[in-house]
Image 1: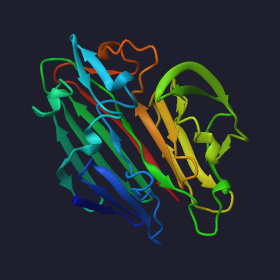
Image 2 (image 1 turned 90 degrees about the vertical axis):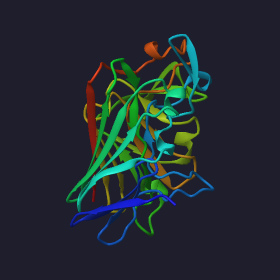
Image 3 (image 1 turned 180 degrees about the vertical axis):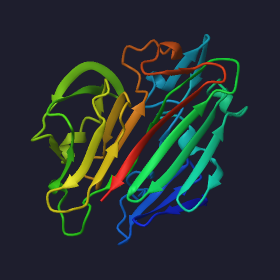
Image 4 (image 1 turned 120 degrees about the vertical axis):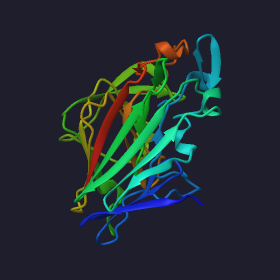
Length: 289
């Protein structure tokens, strides 16, 4: 069984597994659970961390320096055991390092740290990627937390909405998990997208070009709200399994391959590059009401 780290504030209690450094529970003082509880019959994850790729690769492969590597959707970090490096009552930090085994599927050295910190009713998540080698590191990183809805008892799923800052947003259509050239306008009502199973019949909603900085999961019949703040993240996804009672809000530094990808990692859309000794940091905030 995976070990867990628990942190708490005057408003929230959060549990994180060392397996994947994955948030497995966020509860308020009343004991209300906000994180999907990984029903194995539906989707057996809570809030996986996406590294060293985000999304699906064409043919589940990439090419680097004339060699082909196999890698499944969203990379391997979500299935690795992280080391707990630091922890106190309100914060903790986990670390994953490259190994000889990881370099057989991802030929780079890396240090990947994930820190969680509670400040009242806000959970701050920080990702830090460091390149300890003398060679460039190519990678992507992202979050995939799944939130339960309805947020309260006696509510209906159709009462729930995702609220954006903009009146108009453009989504990129997917085909078999890969980006297509097709775009469409997301239909909103006063900046809100009301949730229904049909929204996700054709896979996730994918937003490019930094369209999402703040997004809120709320309900017309409850005071509970989950607000994600992810300013500066270039890509964003929203996903659920049609008919299920969870929705994922996903900020990304990286994105799936395009249908016409040449599979070269150096050419991959959204790929990040770190030089020798360089470090990349990003964070997002979850405000739970």
